[in-house]
Length: 111
View (cartoon, rainbow, N blue to C red):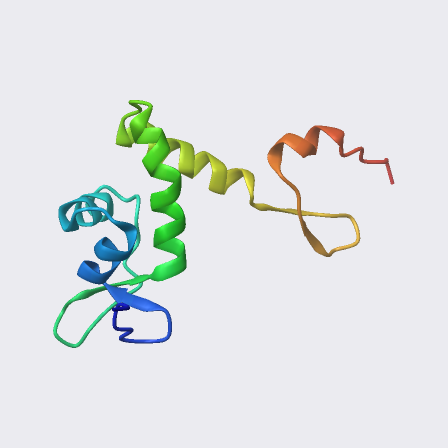
């Protein structure tokens, strides 16, 4: 039996817990400390999560937790990763994604 989809790719908290094979309390806790984001709410107030986003994050968290890292450390690591993927403006005026570690190789010529 597959989980019921309430909207395009949004699942209720219980459905996410079932698909991710984690307790409901884990999904709720990860949301409360900022590891997971609620995409929307139903009219009845239920939390809705983006299936792919949440499953991807839980897949990344699971092995790290097994290595005994704290959830605060995991949240900091995720924030660093997101920050490193920010966009850097290039000379032509276009925006191009460049990971932070690659910026050291960008050479700017004087005008």
